[in-house]
Image 1 (cartoon, rainbow, N blue to C red):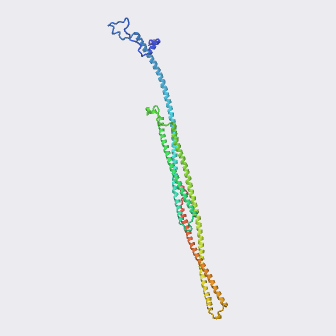
Image 2 (cartoon, helix red, strand yellow; image 1 turned 120 degrees about the vertical axis):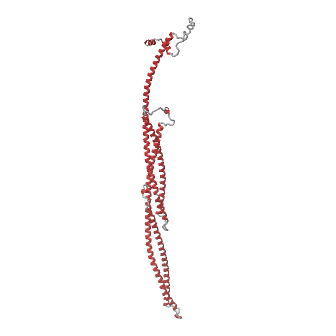
Image 3 (cartoon, rainbow, N blue to C red; image 1 turned 60 degrees about the vertical axis):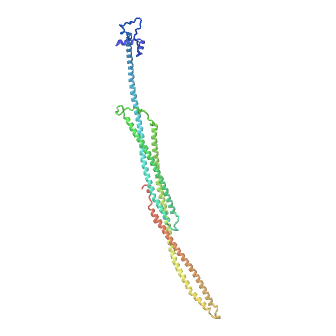
Length: 447
């Protein structure tokens, strides 16, 4: 073996080059073409296709060089393989560690977004419940306005049943008209606010569902990434997926992934703030409408009270004047009787005086004298006629005054009945019905 190594190391360069050119054929077969070749029949079978001795040595040296080159190349290949194995092992560990870190970072990001989505879903659920409560208050407040409106319309209808001259457009009717108009406006406002609440509740639920879908996707992705973090080289449930390294065409980028969740959170927060503002607006509307209705109710009650006082005062004055009129009618009737008696009493003296004058007109001749008695009788008749005329005129005046008093009595009694009817309408019909007016809490939708 040592001799072989010495021979192989001391070979000249041309032979080494010749060995390095293997596996090309390094020799030629000896041909029987020389001048002194034998061409006898006895050696024909032994001289065909034989190698020369030099060719045999050259072939051996070529084999030695080929073995040395193969060993050297194999050794270099082993060294490079070991180095490559170490490098690829380090690279695999490094890339696996880095991938593990990236998956962990994405897992944390997913957890943060998932927590944010869950928080917004809970806030939207709580806000929607509060808005539903406010919507129920609006509906109760709207139902509560039905009674005041029926009271106001009933009071207006009762006011129409007043009789002349009490059928006037007084402060009570004006306040009742204002109350009815106020209630109609409040009902329209409450209906519009209810529609706004319904739309806002729908938007809240839509964004809640969007956040829930995002949260569900995040939970699923979180569980997948968490399972990926638990995989290691000794895991038994791992296998080859050759086509898994391709990017999906529908896959999102980190920017679009984050922006999608941010947009969902922004929309949810926007609707939550809108719901909060709407709840505050509803609270103000309910409080203001309840206070306005109660203030108008108090104004109507005050107008009713003042009108009733005016009617009561007018009735008392009418009763007073009626009593006075009745007393005057009695006195006037007595006066008419006295005048009639006085006229009747003057008839007898007139008859006497006229009879005397008639009888004295029958005196004969010169006895038919215009004496003092005659003048006195004539003056007496004239005085009695004047007295009768005066008495009859006064009697006519007294009778006319009596008729006027009777008409006044009838008017007073009629007006008194009208005032009594108006008081009955205001007190018994209207104010008694207004005692059922809802409270502020009922008008605010709490009951």
